[in-house]
Image (cartoon, rainbow, N blue to C red):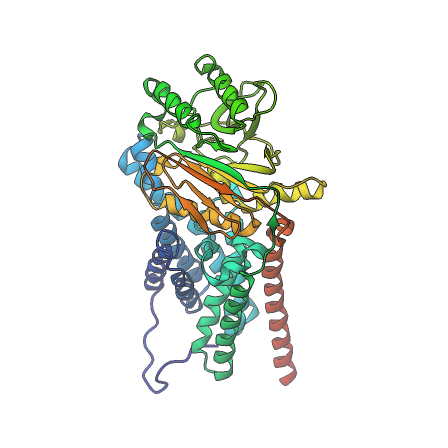
Length: 529
């Protein structure tokens, strides 16, 4: 089925070349970045996907559809993650041309997922001879979602700028506690497909598509008033430290002692139920600290009743490094301390894929090959609340955080009531990476119905409530402390219980429906013959 031309009597225009469609798709992909923080123009995400789907539907063949998807993915990734150049060149000492090429190569690699999604959709249309509504409402949203989900876990995953993150403040955000960020991406793609039907030749189809979009967004608004979780225990006071330590000096041996003294002073300047530092606020191992450093913090903890969580590297019995958060509690004698060890590591920054040590050797990244913590780790008790830490990049993997909460529930234990992210994003300067990561944390709150605390080196240090709303926020690139009172939340959202299973089932059901419709149409045509 074809799109209707404005003037049926006008002479047909020559078909656009695949290169022209690729260029259009690349621009649309780059524009889609404006849907994310700090810009927040989420309707552009829908329009951008609509442009992509239209170009793929007009593609000459399956190969052209895949190339169009590849161009879109390149534009999206290059525009949205250009800040990686800062970490590799400015702080990783990589030559500027090589750093630029590395960013471009990453964009080309990540674009393969979009190419596969659009190529698969084009192939299914050709094989199943699908109608336009079946393509725009069933196949394209499903393949988009399945390959975006695949991008989130294959080769350790790179889910940054997943479609759903653009909709934490849109009406679709009401669905986040049910289907998570990938579910929001599917709904965004479904919206884009429905809008394409507004130029369908049949009036009934156009009005049905418009009515469906209105109903979808109305349901999303209504779901925002549903309370999936409930307050538990008494609120806790928190102090979140933002050290603003320059990345160039952070690991400089001549600067380490000054940073240690600064954080010690900031921690002990005022008591709170929970005092948290950023990731690797302490850059040396425990045995390399000045004598009595941790014992002094433990004494302060006991005297004031403050629980202190310090980001620092640790060693295990096999002398393996871990990126960790060390918790010092008011009860008991100094040590052994609570530890949360980061388990989802950053490729090239925290672990080296086999055969690629030569690439890491080109960058001056300390602690670049670390061990992995356990997938499920105990939360930290802070008075009436259980605080579950995650470290920097782990915040991107909502299914893993939800899995930890669900694991406690399945084993009859109390799930964590507060989430805490400690990060060091100084690697990326004052770039859009900072608000993008804040938006990701907001999505984790929406999915789990729990507040998220963020203690970061240069930003964004924030307190987010269980509805994904930023309650308090420090200005970036300033040395400061954020003090707040936080209410923990208990209960299970559907996303905690089922993770991404719901949206994967919906995508699979959409493809099955498209197949059944195709088979029914073929049988009908055969009967007429």
